[in-house]
Image 1 (cartoon, one colour):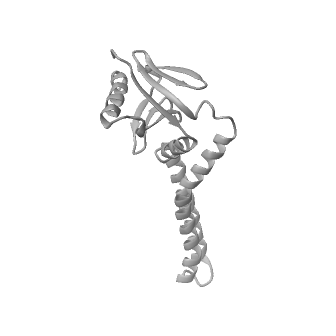
Image 2 (tube, one colour):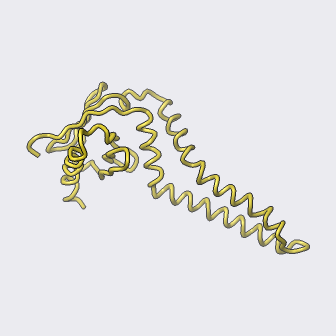
Image 3 (cartoon, helix red, strand yellow):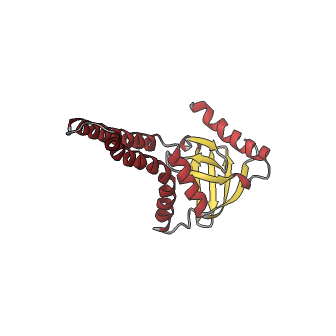
Length: 179
């Protein structure tokens, strides 16, 4: 890379909350936890069904409805409420301490030996081997340094789509030899 590529942007609390939500939606661990929750609910449903079968009167529509409608509602509500819970939890976690190093204006520079991030609190250098992957979603270019930590660059920070594409391609060139 002859001329270092650079982008200037500002991270807000809402950008970091959106990153947490994005990351949670795509997390294999979260998917496994949700699958475990659904399987536990199904197991409880099966036990309820067995209990109803052995009661006097056996199974009828009312018994089934009284048992399974609340269970189905719990599962549906869990999936509907989870994104909101992630947002609330992320905001609360970010308010637990000072966020000076996470929010505010910053400059990200791609150099031959890695990425340099400069903010009002200092400078951080990350060598290319420490970069796991780069992901572009509808709002951000996410440069992952671990499964839960990334540089969160708003797509609006780039002057054009071409500038964003050059920036992402430069990162991917450094990642390609490791794939």
